[in-house]
Image 1 (cartoon, rainbow, N blue to C red):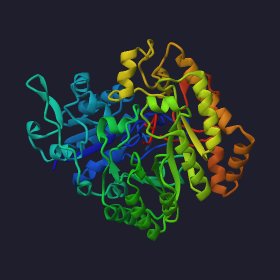
Image 2: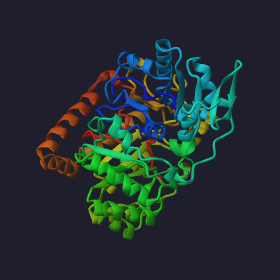
Image 3: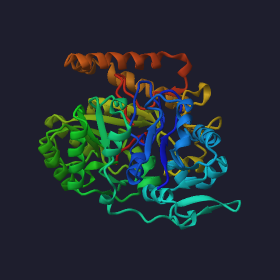
Image 4: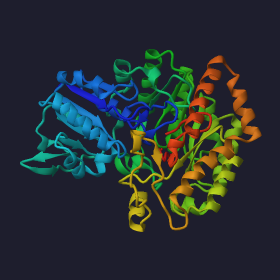
Length: 499
């Protein structure tokens, strides 16, 4: 095996654009997802090293001294971070000209040729599901023999045949061994999860067809391929042993509840371990399954409601009716299951009237916390192609994050004839204000602060950071990427939608 470095590259301060964040942007409070998409191939390559530079506050100056120890570097990139990541690649190659360097991630999966043309420092791109592609590169196999690889040969860019999709997910080793070896779990914060938390995937893909959701349309696909319950529970047993300080485990599958009986079986295993856990869910889980999950340690669902308007839900192919979402939410409240609800402003069909409908719907559902995101047009998604065809992308910018001042905060990318990007952006702030600054919600969130000294300190810190961001005039035109008014953060698609 080649000596291999897996790198989540240095980026803007506080920028969570790494191999775990579905919605790559700078958060107004510190929020980082685990770099699971890099940890998985790292687990397949013996004696490799995973470095998560943003989570460790590492600059390029901190990373460069280590590259001389490696023969191969694999960098995870995203659409917002790609130009910066290409510069990091050039710096790594300058420091070690013998280094073979490749990119992975949704952006290069859908734009491999453009990515290779962007910099000669990028030797190859591993497309789509890249775990075993990277292992074969690390084994030193000739590039022409590796499925799923794009690379240069004789001055030309070559795209090998697609790699067959992985169905036996139990072939993938546990990522928690890499977490223990290379990561500091206290670096990872998500506002709606208890700290410290730990997240893994128990499967890949999502059978839903949401037009804006990133991973299923670029890497994971629309078939939910899962690890066996025993494989998952064994990893959780190890994780509990490795990290006794963890307060909550999170299953980051696009829609963990898509296979209810499997979810119940994993839940029973979690119940025997006695650890609290949370997951992504669609707002259609039957009551009996909800109760079984709750009885075995489920604490919280992340639920993509997206909109309170029926026509918009049809436009984005959400696959859940408003009346079903209402029943699901009522059942969760009855069972004491908390909900972090995610909403998206600016989807096709959005008007000032539909925004008002969605705000009222969110107030009616009253999830514990919310995320309000701007509709994000990531290459490879149906929404991106739809925006191109209809001329909805802003004429002055196609960026997803603000480049000015290297801030990395999200911008409103869509501009409709009947609804401007300024109006869409302003709606995010109005949404948060009207959801959180209600007497009922203020009382609820204030009461939560007094449940423990740690919770009090955490909410005060997060609240101060959030309001500083809200009041900053220099952020005018940039959105609070995936955050709630008390500092709760989510990711997306990241716009994050589950199901």
